[in-house]
Image (cartoon, rainbow, N blue to C red; front, side, top):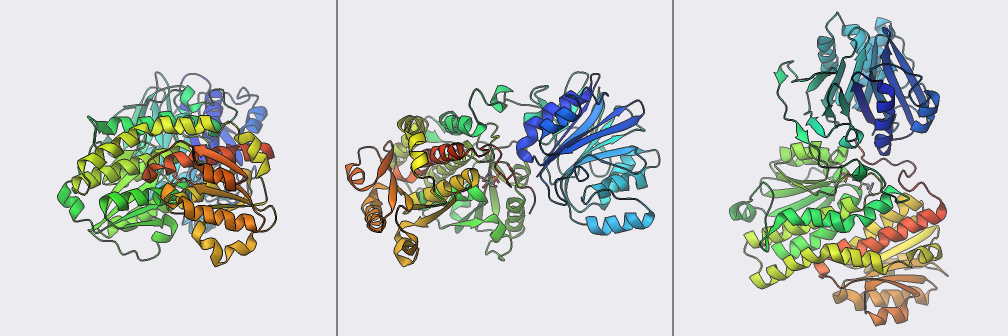
Length: 607
Ligand code: AGP
């Protein structure tokens, strides 16, 4: 996944592009570049490595004067992260420059066709085919050349285009990759997401797939795929620049962990009115829900683990079977999905390629789709029949935290809403659970406050191989806890259903083997306790996560971290927090790049 940005106005573009790229660096950061129009020519500057290198090369932009330009920060898909493969790419005649986020699936055929025409390629990228197509199709009408080029492309693309023939004009094109327009005063912008724009404007337009936009300093014109002008509403971004900044924390990840009480409150508040759960802009009738024979939750990574955690609440309360499926698997397994299947698609970015593909597969088979996403106007939001935004605010760290807990909370809200609609929950239980939901923000805050000693513990349990164990809801939490540890501290961590240990895995438990035992499901605490005894008998060192006041655990585990008492069905939203912090402090101890872990990107918009 990559980040693109564009600016056209009266002031120099390069400083604006560099600042925007720094806000997009979480989308990919193995190379970066800018192209600026000045004195009739396009100047391209690009580097492999971080944007800081581009700042240095362009003297913070002063070395690339000009009032219109495009920029790109890359997460390599085709071709290694080198200067040659970095974007922007320039046409052979030097008149066109392009930046691109996405994948051109037919690029090899296009490359051969263009080489046969005599175009010379300088990179290994799929993107370079685009700039040569533009040169090939241009006959004085840039919009026509852009449309003809887009018509040849198969795959996903958010494009930014600059041309020497049209000074001050940018084109932006969207197909299955996020692209947003910023509307300023005497200047206009495009970017892969709003965090690159909020410093300059909070007035944005969300491009839809198949649309292209022509930007000048004084105008933004949007066209549909037939080239007809379309009117797009201007939305107001509610996020502040500060919300997209670190706010004094050492890392975005720590900031976002600490923001969870507020984020969860933001997810809850608009949906609980007068003690009742209300769903935003849709009202699934009881009949529609009664027609649902099964629910599929599909997602990737942590969003998938959010589904694994929420499944217990939905099944318990709605008495509808729930399947939680990895999107990258669901799309290829000829899924048993029909008009009686309700699909909950969970995604922080709303742009994960596998999740989008799984969504389309289910819709094609007749399922109704509810999207549970954080990014407004994202692809998954647009493709869903109904959308429940998680209102987590901008999540910059690659490792999701508030994105995950707000997904959980929205899924819990859905469980209560549906159970009530179906008449499968008594008023007393319903009222009690609504109150439990409303207490989650402060319980998450308590979980944070209780675990001030975690930095000390992190050092004790940092090992090349870690086990996370739990049962039922605790197992689902263990899945997410292990992923957090893996992705930011690079330690091998595996989660196991605690009951499974004796079926083979316990053979791996040797002297001083660290085991993180999640024991917050009090109904199953004795069972997990027996697993703690089992592994300790074989030399393990056990860090237990338990509900405050649980003295039994204290007597058995080597160390214990606590959470406040919370409704078991909702306990994952609280139990995950100490595990997020454990991973954070372990990674900090190891000196890892916490916000931008190696090999990862914030949203995987490629398959
Ligand atoms: C989580 O920490 C990871 N960054 C990753 O697993 C992520 O959850 C996954 O890629 C799904 O992303 P999405 O929620 O934006 O679809």
